[in-house]
Length: 115
Length: 113
Image 1 (cartoon, each protein chain N blue to C red):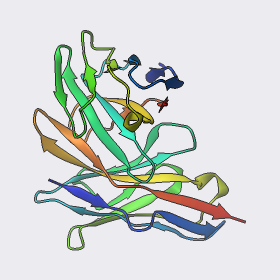
Image 2: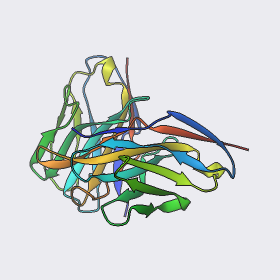
Image 3: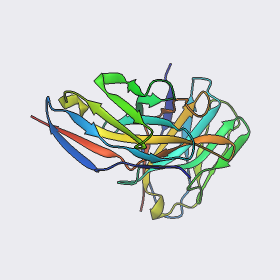
């Protein structure tokens, strides 16, 4: 079974600083990878996804992620953090099982942005 | 286009009570999913459906049941509520599989006392 590891359950950055959220996956086949964001008391919203096209994927709100097969990583970055980026971020991998593909989520990273 | 809607938003149940969490999507998606989210645990798949009349178990199905009589609706049933079912429940839908994006509802917060 595929799995996802997110290093760091909490990350704190200053406004304007670089955001780096780490995600490593295990998969025996080329994966589909996703980053979702969850704002307080809301559902999950797609930030970006890797579907085996370009290895550098650009998403909404200035976020991007790079797929590195050799490192089995899909880290999320943003050059300059904004207060509105404070949320929980989930990395996920799409896995075939049973009768459908299913998402396996990491445990999440809560991003705090300080002044 | 409302996307995925869930009712209720919040509910308190007593141990042993039953309830149905409602989920509706208006995007004509074939695939629908139920997840539970516990603190520090990410999301775990409870049940999913690949179309009307077809459902299958996910990672944590015990204590739950589902049905899919229409494309739009995918209710989740708790028959005998237990404290371990205290969680936030999310419904999601997608057009297809694999690389397709899942669209999530706003969630139902359930407290079992």
